[in-house]
Length: 554
RNA sequence: GGGCUUGUGGCCUAGUCCGGACAUGGCGUCAGCCUCCUAAGCUGAAUGUCGGGGGUUCGAAUCCCCCCAAGCCCGCCA
Image (cartoon, rainbow, N blue to C red):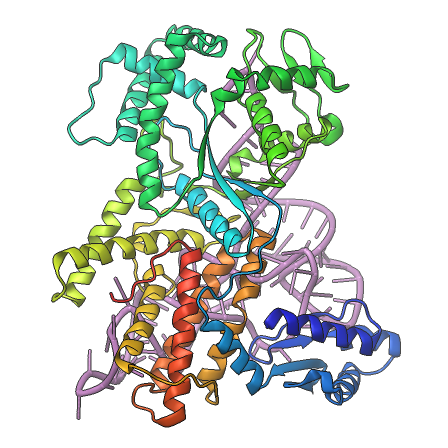
């Protein structure tokens, strides 16, 4: 509804002013939509913007197509406000199950996220990738796109060689109850310590990498075993976070099936390619200073080479590729895009996010300096359990556990997704453990509150009539939900949906305190209950995109 | 040294791409609200040179230039 009205008003303003860009935006408190086109016309017409705005408002208000939209000039601004029938329509749409789903679209999308090296558990930096990626994935599905989510498993990198070496030489046994990925990290950290003590080990690592590239069965099996072990732990963490991948793509497969050789062959034929002891591409024309090396002097491929093969494969099997990558991949990502273009292949769209660091500095798996996602979930869940127990001591233990679990994931995911990806952050336990305001639990709470009211209400008639300030504000916001989804996938910025959901919860809480629902009577009661149901449904749909459980009770 | 990103009240943060109406919220502080639909809630108050300086414009947090600070990258690692 909102989007159609936006386009309609835009068309009318174009017709009225003769301007192509009529500067139509959301009007904040002033209006549902507002245009500042009068400023622009002022110069051309040499008249005061306020007079022009008044003329436009006057002309448009006589147009019957405007229907239930009120137009008014406030100074130089032309403001549009949706009237009662449009607000009714918005709420009518918002109560329908699945509200916000956009019509099915063609164009298969492949979205890659997390893809952390399988040499240890996911830490609080990695899960920023997970949460951004998983939220985008959910938004794309909601917006009607066929989508596949992939985890690119780097199973033949140097780190894995080090892990494998560690398994072979250090004899570290897995401890009782130790999670797979944490065990692998322990081996990796210990192996790195050995490596530091004795640089000769580097040669052994190099040798392992040559063997795995040649497809030496024993080495490949060892690598695969180590990676599988770690991936098990990572998968459990992802599941705990409510994040889902459709497919784990193994990097080594591209070597094994010959794609890496083929891509190197194609690269060699590029005019920008150079071959000395290594194979490298000169990307100076594309604005990169350094050599982009794709084959080592010992003949092995590097990460970038395999990544080229992976993206070539994706480009041929999907219509659109999106990667979620940490800011440390900016250069390599841009080089990848540039090289794919040179090869005549489709480059991916890349969503970058800045780093999460600890108060004491940046995280490092190798140094064992990180807060794991598992530890975070454990702490937050424990706190959530205490909170639930204080509030709802009468609930059975299992139910309190289940609520605590949902609340914890909500807190973690929301805490991450609410911040713009381009902002670097410092991990903060106090904020992670805060379940008030601007938090996932806060939004869950608004949803549970709506459910509680509806449960107590029993049967009621659907009525769509809104008069109070709070009712109207809610209805206006409900109308914007589909537009919020559309904007999120257009800009690839999931935090927009986080803001949307929080604002909806804010408006609902204010409404709750000013406009009694169950205690009101007649049509007012019915229309408010209908509104509560619309809020409940829209919050549920919003939370689903955010990967947060919409609890009915908490 | 070069590149990218960020800099908004004590702290965190929206808005910046696409310039416009008193700069968005939260935390913390202070003052209120549970005989009343879940107080994980609501209301009010105080707190701002939108990093600094120039410029463009009727109008700049937003665009341009310079400078400062922080993070990241600049590997035959991934």
